[in-house]
Image (cartoon, rainbow, N blue to C red):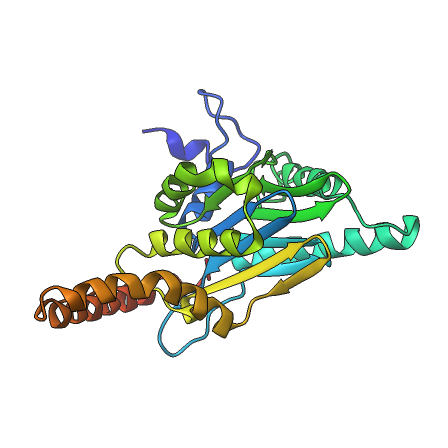
Length: 277
């Protein structure tokens, strides 16, 4: 009943010890399009869903290159994500110029967390409404971190953030024990499979997702659409062959269902607020 008198300022505590402005920022991350990260001993894969506001607009970039050995995927307010990725790029360049060595991933994540935490204790600032999956490779191996708007950070073997991310988390939890020894190709396949889980009925196409890879002797780069589609075809064609061997009438019904879900997805995208998340 009296909640509104505590959520107008980020520095005002509620009687229960909560900062509502910070929780609102974390809610913005949950409303953003899904982003997924996985790591093995030698590689890190970042993937995200490309969701446009309407059929007439293009999608916003959700994965950014920080350095040859570091990349970041975001979920939440894209504008805040661009600002933080630019900050990370600047920190990495300054470190390389000063020490003539790549910036350790853990140190960059601490700097990023400190920058986010300052916004929770200044009355003239607001928390960054974006969550970041920071993947990188340094002398201690491959790393995947999640940076929260509250200033907390956690290291994961695999993680998913954003809208409908729980379905991807469930998939990753079933298979995460094998990720440590996974090959580059297996990581990419698992990342795309996790992306498919977040679509909830929509047909997975290469145009709906972006995938990036970095690893030992492999600088951070994006996979092209043809490579992504080839991976999708390896596990999407199997059900189609089984349907062809079964009932012949099942194929038109499946096509009708897929078209229906596509229309629903299009109408859902139109309901997204002008603020790109």
